[in-house]
Length: 164
Image 1 (cartoon, one colour):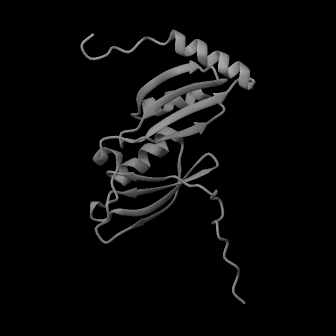
Image 2 (image 1 turned 45 degrees about the horizontal axis):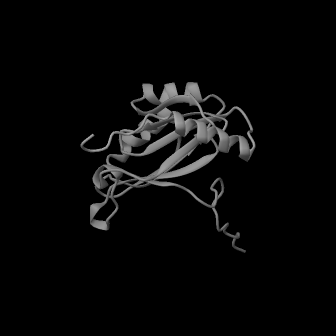
Image 3 (image 1 turned 90 degrees about the horizontal axis):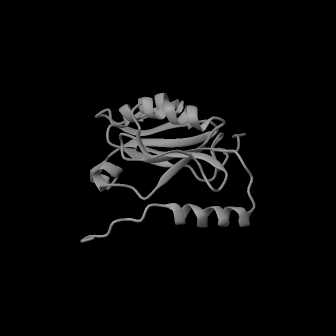
């Protein structure tokens, strides 16, 4: 008798990010060095482009593939940016941030104690993907978060507009 197939594979969650990278082989090395990714499997086509790689960061699975323009499978570098940020919760945001930057990530937002209770920062990887890194330090109420947000936005430097 055949064994039942699980509809969600072992180790996966309902939602799994699928990152398209220009030079996915290099991206896998970066994710290993920057975020401690464990490379679980890599499948390549006959031209040695990565069709699917499964990696694990902490307890979360991700898939990584090369660009395949002929299938409209384009990375943020080909699309001139991304509206998506992947968030990593960790026990030590400072150490994780330092490790990512040392591996080649660019700082988008330096480490700070955020008004919602996290030690928090943002980086971009060399492949155009955005990452935020956080460690929960305080469990604020919704009212405390709203008050902190109001204060943070009031203190934020005003943006220059064209012609001013």
